[in-house]
Image (cartoon, rainbow, N blue to C red; front, side, top):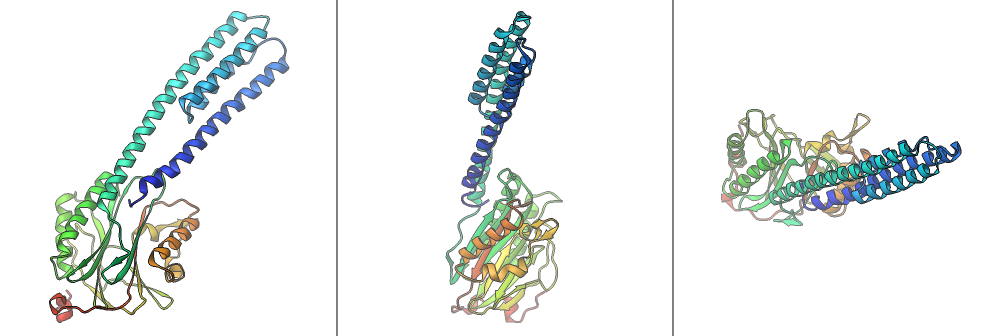
Length: 375
């Protein structure tokens, strides 16, 4: 869902196609070799050349039509040689050879149709990925005074595109970030993600209260989806060293501080956007060097042999050093290794680092810091 996703798909698809073509060619040759050896060992009569007809169809399963045609020509020539060597049933053998040639033509046509369908699917995937890139924008390396990096990890090359979303903005009310996850996948999920981000990019500059932003986003989601659709989201605001978080059914961000990973759970649970969440903010005072990890549920659900990836235990070691971009690369490497290269869901990650406070105007102070109730 992020930048470089089409290249990611292409980089993985091309080797897969090459390996498939090689496997198909090898299977066809493995079939031809024992048939030829058996015919030579059996004597002068051509008894098994009918089996050769399967070779071009084996190649058509994965290889290009050119490879299929080459295998078919080889099979036809081989069948013709054994037919001519036979002293009896020459008419029947000739018919078999003609059948191999016809089968070669059919298999080549099948390979052409399969290639066109594969190209069409690849093009649709590319267009969908471009649509995702239009929704998401690059993060960092600086947003306000914060160092910020974002990363998207695709589940598989063939995975449906998802609705993970994130944004970081430097507003009059401080640096504001959102991370969210749309229920479902495909273009409908991307469409809803674009609606949420479009609304957020507007109201984040207009609303002084994060709870008002949540209400605006909830109405945008409710107008755009069915009864069973929703968006989990966490909204974060950093202003003058004060971190404020509101959470709508999303995994709690992790605060990385002095070797520890602290989940910033909300004071009270709230449902996702689309279900009229009533949120209560959690407020933390940041220290220079603190880092905050925002992530979608694909990270928490990544597992191998039933064991979940221990993000809380490994977070500081993976994310607490180097730049924030380096930290996300380390996390992705460890995660992919943990699941042996196969994830069940896409994952969006945002990591920010707090260096120090900047002056804040009184007009930008939110209502809950002025003594208002947080309910």
